[in-house]
Amino acid sequence: MRPAACRPHRRASAPGTNTRTLTAFNDTFAGDRLTVTWTLRAGSPTGKAVDGGVLTPRIPPGGQRRLDLTFEAPDTTQPLHLELRVTKAGDGLLYRDASTVYQVRPTESPAMK
Image 1 (tube, rainbow, N blue to C red):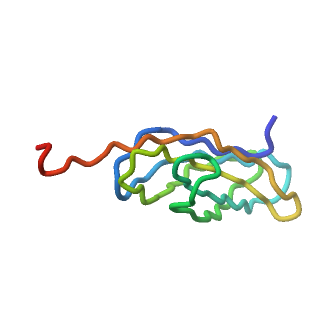
Image 2 (image 1 turned 120 degrees about the horizontal axis):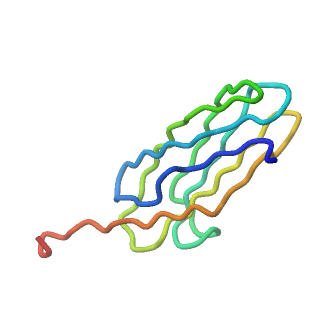
Image 3 (image 1 turned 60 degrees about the horizontal axis):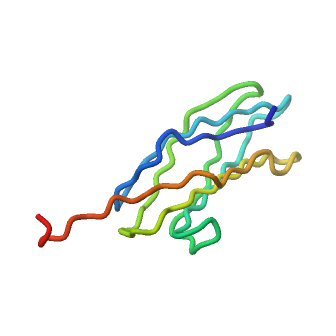
């Protein structure tokens, strides 16, 4: 059993603003304040960070909540790697996932239309 989890629901992206929905779970026995930190990296899981942020949901023990994560995807042919970390004060790191990869659909140039 994982103490907390977040799972993205889609894996395709377009250049520009994108919103994904995560489902966050609080599988701990006390406390409702979680911190979800996310980083979007170009090229590899250790590549250059192109966007990131922090979500601070309140989720009761045993509960779950859908969270919107909005990011700016660059117009690139490189894959974008999303890393999620869930922490809770007093408990430290509860969950980490770096397996989600988005492939950006390139924009069409005027010559391609």
